[in-house]
Image 1 (cartoon, rainbow, N blue to C red):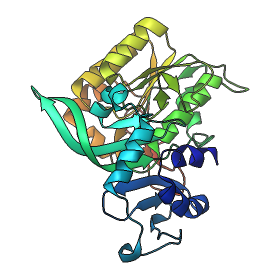
Image 2 (tube, helix red, strand yellow):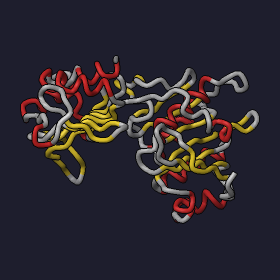
Image 3 (cartoon, helix red, strand yellow):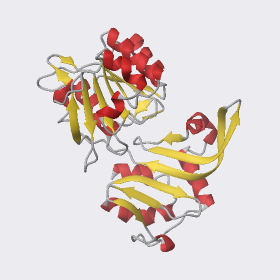
Image 4 (cartoon, rainbow, N blue to C red):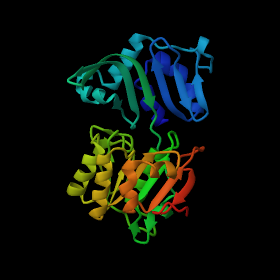
Amino acid sequence: MSCLNDIMSVIPERISSAIAAVANRYRIKELRLRVGKPIILRSDKGEILVNSEGRESVASKALTITEKEIREVIDRVSRFSVYAFSEDLKRGYITISGGHRVGVCGHVVTEDNHIVSMRNISSVNIRFAHSVIGCSGKIMRYIYHGDGINNTLIISPPGCGKTTLLRDIAVCLSDGDEQHGGLNVGICDERSEIAACKEGIPQNYVGLRTDVLDACPKALGMTMLLRSMNPDVIAVDELGGLQDLDAVLMLNNCGCAIVATVHGENIEEIFEKKCFELLFENKTFKRYVVLRDGNEPGVIAGVYDERGREI
């Protein structure tokens, strides 16, 4: 209920009262608000539209939101000081209490090819933060290696819960268990999705021994964590460019373990990417875990060793 209350507190009462009953019946992932268009809830069962009475509806009879109400949402999200959140808006979102991300679209103002501000906001997408405690249970045995950690790359198509899974892995490594002591974990959270920091404080639980660099570019953040926090393992979401991969190699050479994710349908797709060639040649990652879509985060499609052989 607290999760829902965090969301409802930034939505106009006309809207919140209409969607409350539906939101309590489903596991809601997103709430999409677009000026003059139907309000859409995206749940684990698919899209849901509601009418003004709070009943599930079709598009022609669904509740819509006004431009004035969108402005009210932004005022509430920014605590009536949009200027104070100008840096967040340059990234396209603001994180609110509970770790929920409020993404925005509107007129972007640029200068010298850099985003200066955003105004006339017409679309809002509220992504509900969900921590699924224990969802990494089946994967941890591939990550632990005796008293050490296997460098692990999680390969996942969109929507399979890779970030939720990575968060839970960080918790498990940080807190430890009956067989493994807790480790110092560094999270480089470039998009504020793992820890969902608000004013520097994680809104999602990420472990007793975890330090978070929020909104920091991954390549720079991995280096900063290594130098400043002496982590045993670093967790990072969505590896991409060459700079990210160079930073991974640097961590490996310095003896710091890494657990990372990357977008992909299967291991073959990743192996074919030229930028990953050096990582494969050096056998940097000892485990590759491929996810598939399922009813919960962390559904395993396959696990592979450093040579790409299925385990």
